[in-house]
Structures are given as structure tokens and as C-alpha cells.
Length: 498
Image (cartoon, rainbow, N blue to C red):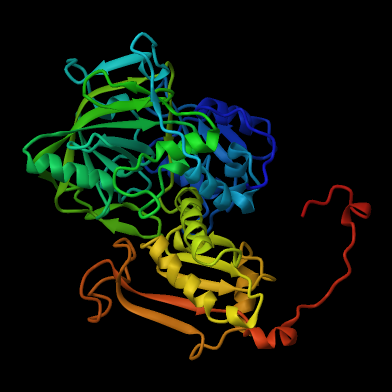
């Protein structure tokens, strides 16, 4: 089992924020009124967005709460909770460098969600707004921010979308970008291959809407668990069971009030609606910018010309709710997407070659999706070449992965300078580069397009590459690092933190 720190008392967003208040330099707040249109994200860009956000930005900065949001007097907005591995580790009771192992074990010890009895009043339904109410309007009810002034419109970026297979009843939860299109409509972009899209297509083929709930403001364990991808979580696998495994307790769900679906009972906000069949809308119909919103690779994606619509039926909230949002290319996305990626790679490689892959880091520069740094140990001459096989397995474990850098056990995979040092001194481009052309990857990488190269036949196809920065086993004695004396630095500097 992964090494554990003290078990945190975190069970919803409010308890997560309470924990951060006890930790130095992990949470800040402001009472200065902020405009949710571009200004809120503009502020957090400097405070702690990190990731692939344009510089200047602060990496590993604190989470932040905006207590006064222009036009929304009774709602606060929280951002950046998962914006550092240290904070994620605090939420999950695990050292930051062992988070991939913890998530791997939680998949192996998953606990399915449970539904509260109908006589139990869930926190998420303390306040009810029905779309049939004469003054109902999403645009004035909830402060969906925009990341930039170019955005197609206000977006809910941290909505946990939950829907079920019309045939089997199996459920799935994922985070998708949701653009507010009118008083009761959201457009939804689904990356090809996502499970909810498969459910939607089944319902649409039958000419029926697909009920969907969107839970916003939940336990960070759920936000991380929801970002697992196939094959670790195949079609019909409910990722809420992984969150249950992380907590050692089932996630509590409640029946929605206006649709035949469930939502997370402790959520701050729940949007209930239906994905309508055969109706599409242009994503930027209200702004005409041609842009969508900033995404994890660090670029603002193009607005999609025809997206499915969610017709909203109701919004329920806690009293004085706290809305969750994120900066699209920020470190928060890196951690939520990347730590499950690490778990998936660790699991697949460990099953194929036990004990050789020591750790994995889904690197910040790839948004937690495009680049994995793998720490591999060769113990015998027969291990030579297996490091490259491990790289191939990583592409199978996470199909959206584009690049793999493999390093030896003496390299700190979480220190980019150390990884690049290994590349400069243990890598020859014409010998240690392995490429696989024309493989499906991720459509949000702008270099993966026929416009970039005629060799790329479709958007989202790529050349996957392994950079083998490991020392050939027979030469390991010639690549020994400098041997410094081990000392207790705190004897000289009592307040020193490594």
C-alpha cells in the first residue's frame, strides 16, 4: 500500500476548504468584488494557476476563494483546490510523490456509490430553482466565469457530469466543458470516445433525451477520480467507486427532483437537465469570437460548430453555495487528469513486468495528458529493452498520451531539470528515439492536425514518441552520479525545508 499520512477529515468542498485553512500558505481569500467575466480567472492566473498558463503565473500557489462576485451576492467561488500535488496529497492523506500508487490501489479496492433514502434531505437540495419558474435564468442564478474575454461564453468548468446507459443502467461521471447558451440551455463538448457520449448516442438513436446531472463543488477526491479514462475504467464503470475507495466510504448520491437520474448529495450546486436528441448549437453563437475557452495544452480552442444541448430542468443548491471553477490550462487540470494517468500506467506496466517501473509523473507541460516521465530500474542485462516496452505499455494504458521520457532510478522525475539532465547525458537522438506514426491521440493538441502536416490524415492523430534516456545496462558503472556526503541539514538550519 502507498505510504499514508494522517487521515484527513474531508467529505465535501467545505471540509476541504476548512482543512486548507489549517495549512500554511495553502488558501487565500478576498472580499474585493470580482467580475466573473475574465477578471476572476485573470486574478488567479497570477496567484496560482500554473500549468501551461501563459507566463507570468505562479506554480504551486495557494487555492483561492472569492467572497464577493459581481451580480451574485449570495454565492462565493473557489478555484485551484487541486492546483498542487501537495494539496491533493493533503486531501487524500498521501505523500505527493505516491499519489499515482494511491489511486491505483483505490481502483483495486473500489467502493460503489450508494443512494440516500428518500426521507433523507440531501445538502444539495436545500434550495430549489425550477426551470418552470417565471424568473428562472441560469445566467443570473449562477456565476459561470469566463477564462478570457475571447471565450464563447460563460463556462461551468468543474461540473461533474453524471449519466447512465439507457440500456444497462450503468453510470459514468466525467468533467466536460459546459457553455451557458441561454436561460435554460448549456452546450456540451464531449471528447470522442467519452462514455457519456456513448450513452447520448444510444438515447439519440432511440429518439429520446438522456437525463444528466451536473454536480459542482464536491469532495476533491471525486474531482480526481472522475478523470480516469479507458482502459482502466471501461464503458459502464462508475468512477465514483474509485472516490469511494480513496475515502474508504461510499459516495452518497441522491435522486434528482426533475429528472430520472442521481446527483452527488453533498454538492454545493446541482444542475439537472436532459441532453436533447438531434439538436445542435454553435458554441459561440452568443459571442461570435470563433473561440471556445483555454484548454489544457495552453491554447484557446476553436468554438465547435455543432454541439449537443442540455435543456436544464432545475438547479438545486446548498444555502449560500460555493461554486467551483478552474483555469483551463492550469495546474489544477494537470493534477486531476495526470494523477489518474499515472495510476493507469503504473497498473498496466506492473502487471506486465513487476517491480521494474518505480514511478510515473504525468508532466505539467503536457497538461497531465500528453507527456509521461517514467522512472525505470534495470536490475540485470535481460532488462535492457524492457524500458522501451514499458513506454509502449504506457501508450496502451492511456491512449491520449503523446510522449514518454524514460529515465533511470537515480533521476528525480518530478524535477524537470533532472529529467533534462538525463536527456543531455544519457540520450542520443538517432539511437534512443522510438516513434510510432499515425496513432490516435488528443484533438486539443493543435499540432495534431492535417494543417500542421500532410502526413496527419485526421485531427487528433499523432506521432507517439519514446525518448529513452536510460543508461545501457552494461555501461551503468560509467554513469555514476557524484556522491555527496549525507548530512542532517536541520542541524545547521533548523527551519530548512527540503
